[in-house]
Image 1 (cartoon, rainbow, N blue to C red):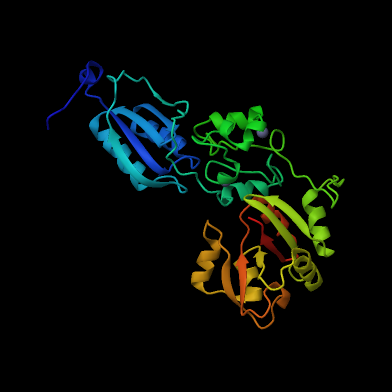
Image 2 (tube, rainbow, N blue to C red):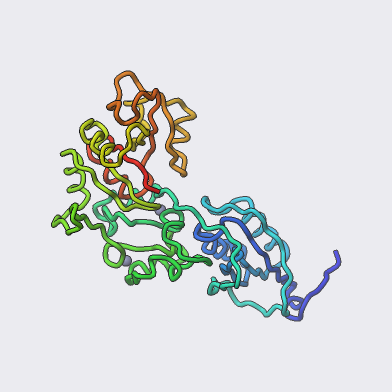
Length: 344
Ligand SMILES: [Zn+2]
Ligand SMILES: [Zn+2]
């Protein structure tokens, strides 16, 4: 095979240097940490960075290592990533000899042509920590990692970095920064990384906007829902207006205040078993309910189901499972269902 070009650094040790452009949903999905780990695995030097077009990376290694790297990158990208296009691009200057691999500072180009990642359903690892009384993020409503958490809702601009998100108002504590900087940590380069010491907190206010004194916002909200109150939850993507779906009076009051006579409300339940109490769930519907996109799935109502006021004169019930840590906590209460509607 003819070599087109080798500079002096490459020719001495038969290293090749290649630069690639990756386009698609490649920011905010753990792509740079993933590339960095691949670089360690294949022993490649070089760098990776986010820019307004997506991800740019330069690899320096023997030919075989580079092709192994690229094969793995394309065939097993991070779970939230969607590679739409990947191509080799020319370098504008001769390649230096790289001693190691690094994640470089993002480059803000004059134009923007990358896809803003959607908010991602909280992952099992984070839920596990959130339920562990010994974990420092026990019952922390803003838990997230490289593979889950808010993206679209918090992003002010691309390329995606903490400084371009609403999280810039929060400075990471040493423990969180340690995770962020540790290539072996699952929060390596997780831009919204936060904990109770350094991140945002829940706040509950009354109808006049005055803070409600409580040591446990979630339990207090659940108690109020059980009493028939309407709770507005400022959540990802907008406000959710929530009532206890089993409480027909509360559902009707929500309809009255929203001046919605009949438009169906969706019901959020903890899991598919809970969904099956109120509606029939087949295997396809179950897969949809549990999919990471967490759609509202139209299920056929059971004869004995929730109050008709949720979806009047409608044979179907729109059901969805929790996707944020806060929704998971609100549904952990034995009270099974909250009807709500989305103010997106
Ligand atoms: Zn997670
Ligand atoms: Zn922290």
